[in-house]
Each structure stands twice: as C-alpha cells, then as structure tokens.
Image (cartoon, rainbow over the protein chains, first blue to last red):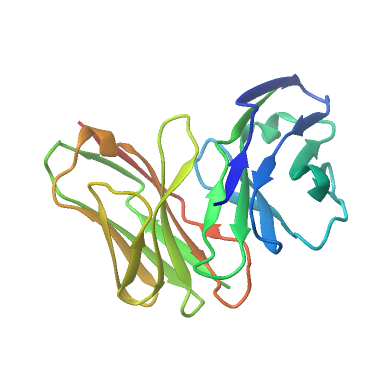
Length: 115
Length: 113
C-alpha cells in the first residue's frame, strides 16, 4: 500500500525567509511518481511538479526547488525568499505505476507567510 | 487544451436530502476520473475512481455513490445526505496513457445542515 506523510501541519514564516516542506512516502513499487500541489484559499488544487522514481535529479523552478532522495524516501519542497502569495496548503502525492493510477495525497502543510 | 468543470461551487443541503454533483472534462478522451473529499483542515481522501464508462470503483464505504454515464462525465450522488457528508469535494482527471499528473476542478463546498 502506498502512503504519504507530511509531518508539518502548519508553518509560519516571515516574508523573504526560506522554507522547506517535508514529504516522506512509502511504496512497494520500484516505479512510481511523486507530485506537489498547491491549494490556495480558493480551494482549487494547482499542480506544481511531477517526478518519476528513476529521476533523482533535483529541480529548480524560479523560487521553488525540489529535493528527491530515494534513499530516505523523501521529496522535499523548498521555497526561497517566500512571498505572501505563497501562503497556501501544499500537498505531496504519490502514484504507483499501472492499474487505475490512484493518487494518494498527504495531509498537507499549511504555509502562512507573514508580511 | 483540456479543461475540467465542476458544479455547483457551493451547496447547502438539509440532512436527508439527495445530492448530485457533476463533473465534466473537455479536450481529452477516455480519461481516468476521480472524486476526492477534503474534510475541513484535512487531506484529500479518494472516494471513487473510474477508468471507463460505467466502471466505478469505491475506495471507502460511505453514503455516496458515483456514476459515469458518458466518457467525460462523472457524477457524485447521495440519496440521503448525512451531516458527516459535509466537506469540500474535488473532481479530477488524469490521462490513461502515461502516469501523468491529475488535474482538478474548482471544487464544491458542501454543507449539510
């Protein structure tokens, strides 16, 4: 069975600080996919990134970066120089290959960026 | 481009009343479709998924049901709502060919009173 754990329920940072959101996953598959989504106050989930299990290269997109480490089953998300617009709930998710491609979400981390 | 529509955006229903939430996808064929529920302050729980017309699988036993009468239409229903059915319901679609990301509708906030 697949499982995603986001141990940080809520995080508050002051604007311009860096913040890292943790994600730890469990799966028995050797091929799987990891995702991060952002849920702003409006409620809609916005896709941020997808990473497959064969690609451990870290990725940077503007102020966002992701650190994927299979050895520790972690897929952490860092926001550099946080801004008020980054305030949202962030979800990490996991999908195993094949079948109906069920996507399992973590419980989310609520990030509040204080001006 | 692909789009997903979900309605209504908000709904207040009395206990015991029926429910019908609709989700449609445009710009793609034979998508995998999903219904998720998000209770207040909590994560997303997968309720139903569908890999084709008339094919519905349930993840958790509950008071709700789902149907897929057309390829790109997914409906969430209940005959009699319970207070515990309150929450934020999200429909999502995903391409079947590759293990791609899921795309979500804007959600329906259901309050059962």
